[in-house]
Length: 265
Image 1 (cartoon, rainbow, N blue to C red):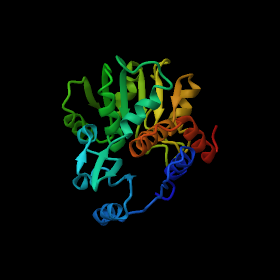
Image 2 (cartoon, helix red, strand yellow):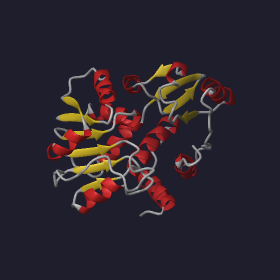
Image 3 (cartoon, rainbow, N blue to C red):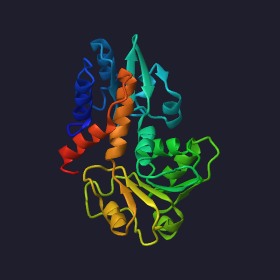
Image 4 (cartoon, rainbow, N blue to C red):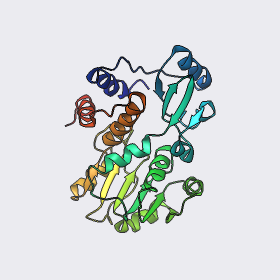
């Protein structure tokens, strides 16, 4: 939590829109989630964000759960109003808003999501509502991908496949979304080979530090459109800010603040 850039973008937005508020990071110990939630209520906070590992574990303490957050089984944004906690998930919708800045359409597209963790879950459930043709999940652990698909109760063409199968069939996908931590600790690591990549495909990686992971560099060198995790981070934050204040902030301003901090452009 110490390295979170959320205070940077939210405090700037509070100042820009003359909102009497401050955004502070709190490192909550693993066994103190309930006390932290009660503390937020007792202090009269207007709301807060939730990050790993608490996005699912906070649900029992939420009074009113948004339909999408309930479907995904994870909360990243909480609004406190009249003593009640309202839980939302802006991760998936934030990713969609960011994706639409680099591609004209999502509906009818064939999508590959690499990974089956919490981030993949929010993105999968959000994409499932956009009229995509299919979404396949490629993950090292097959059972995790199968479980995610089983938890989605809608009618969607999806398969859980191995990373090896994903590599060999990569050419059939229009959008590839990398959601694992590969490329975070080791900038020379990539989850799969892009040899069969469709030249018109969009490649996304939700990691934003570093700004360019190996998979994004390789895709860009091949001439593909690429997107790092800054857009998802900024848009999920903007949606949270709107839930707290009723104001949709300037996402381009937020993005530039993050890029300046990371030394990008």
